[in-house]
Every structure is written in structure tokens, then in C-alpha cells.
Image (cartoon, rainbow, N blue to C red; front, top):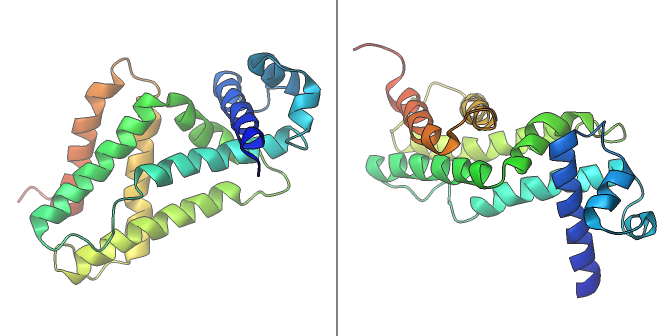
Amino acid sequence: MPEGVVDKREAILRAAGKVFAERGYHATGISDIARELGAGHGTFYRYFKNKEDIARSVVSRALGRISDALSDEDPGSAETLSQYREQVRRIGRKLFELVVAEPELGRILFYDAIAIDRAEPDLAGQAMEAAAAYTAAFIRNGQDRGFLRRDLDAHVVGLAVNGMIVTGAVRLLHVQDPAGMGQPWIHTVETLMFDGLGSS
């Protein structure tokens, strides 16, 4: 794809992401995106078929941002418990910092992703399963090395851990001091992973 086409398509995706985050998917029209972009409807339709098409692309772009943020984290790299716990904290920080820096990304993923697609209704579900598989690979490394219990299903644990992370990320969108919330949340997720809820 020529560079100019890529740049224009990216500009449309950024504008659409901003408007979807502000207005919500259902309340957003092509005219709203065009107005944010400062271009006519014709420009939009040269790159996307309709609002649903661009919304799917916006969600895919948001998922790509998360993937990029974690691209240097190898699930099997931690060889000691201290390395493993530090990797857990590091991943948590990266995700929270991304949501704080780009809150529209969180709003799109956590509020609009499920609503956007009639033609591809499993988009959000597939993304959740992919995220669970990614986390499960980290869980298996911890189990194989004896850092985590081996009697629990790694995939189910991955879904549970991701649920805690997503809940925290959603909460970030509604608090006055999102930057101050990250560390306590990451510490709690880490504690639950390694120490559980027992008092002893």
C-alpha cells in the first residue's frame, strides 16, 4: 500500500477513534468523523466501505497498540521467581500506562467493541480468547518452573487474570487520579496470583 494511502488511512482511523470514544459507536455518524478529519465524505469512502468497516479497523488498531506495547515480553523468559514477579509487574505497568496515555483506546475496547459489528459478532470474543492464550503462556511458564500451582487450568487462570486487568483498566477511565491507581491495582493482582486470599 503506497505511503500516502497508509498515512491517510491512519489519519481517518485516529479521527474515528477519537469520535467513537467521545460519542460512542451508535451515536457517531460518518459526518462526525469527516468533520473531525476536516475532509468530505468522499475521502472516507475511498478507504472504508461504511461505519462498521472503519469501526472494526479502529478496534483492530487498538488491539494492535496493546500487542505492540507487550511485543518485547517473552512468556518463557523468566527463569527465577523474582524475574517472574518483576515481569508480572512490568506487564501491568505497560498496560496501565497505555490506557492512561490513550484513554480513547480503553473506551473503544471496553465499551464499543462489542457493539460495532453485526457481520463479525465474534470480534470481541476472539480478541478475549487471544489475550487469554497470551496470558496462559505466561501462566504455564510459572507452573512449569514451580512458581504457580500446577493443578489449575492455565487458560482459565489467564482469563481470570485478564479479567482483573480489564476491570482495572475500565476503572482508570472513571477516576480523577488514574496514574495513582495503577500501582495499588498491579500490586493486588500480583498478590492474588502468588499469595491468594488466605490470611496465613
